[in-house]
Image (cartoon, rainbow, N blue to C red):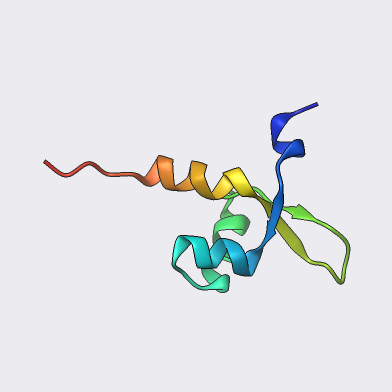
Length: 65
């Protein structure tokens, strides 16, 4: 089984809190494919694998000299 499938899933609101942005921005990142998400039915909405937030930040990390 894929490791992403084993990860804990967090809400979009929690992903936004961890990234320090709005929920709408996280939805935009999901729509653009920058962050993966799983739809868990109509009422439960989207969930983000916990590691996706860390992987997103790592891809965006900039070292200043």
